[in-house]
Figure 1: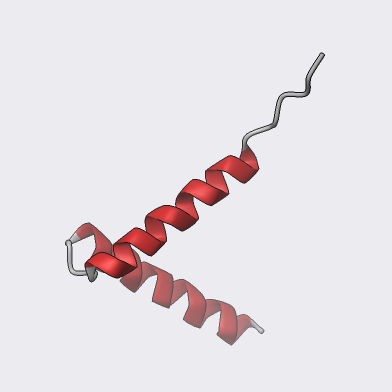
Figure 2 (figure 1 turned 90 degrees about the vertical axis):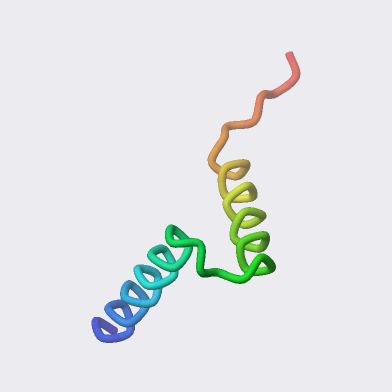
Length: 50
């Protein structure tokens, strides 16, 4: 399990470095932005009607 987690962390670090350097394909960048938006929405508490 520890090895799998380390491999995932390394892959994420490479992805983040490539993204920061502008080396990701435009399609991948769009997918990442969509996922980030969805995650932000899930973390934001929803207001209930009074």
